[in-house]
Image 1 (spheres, rainbow, N blue to C red):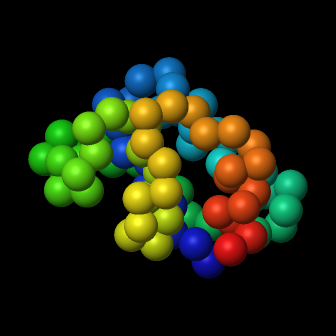
Image 2 (cartoon, rainbow, N blue to C red; image 1 turned 90 degrees about the vertical axis):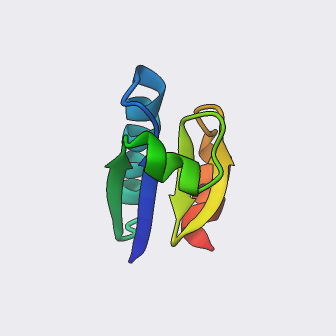
Length: 78
């Protein structure tokens, strides 16, 4: 199972990012656990300056925009 954190303020882009990752994981039958983190102090601990950010198994794989489908698929399959 991949542990995925979506870092952000809970804005529409952050919500959309979480929904998109969950949808693609379901399509690929990949087990994930998504956590949304909105605490600014925790977000800063990851060195994130723009949100939404995607953290997979404690590695920052993306930040600053809604990721595209191909990128999400590659993260989930890795």
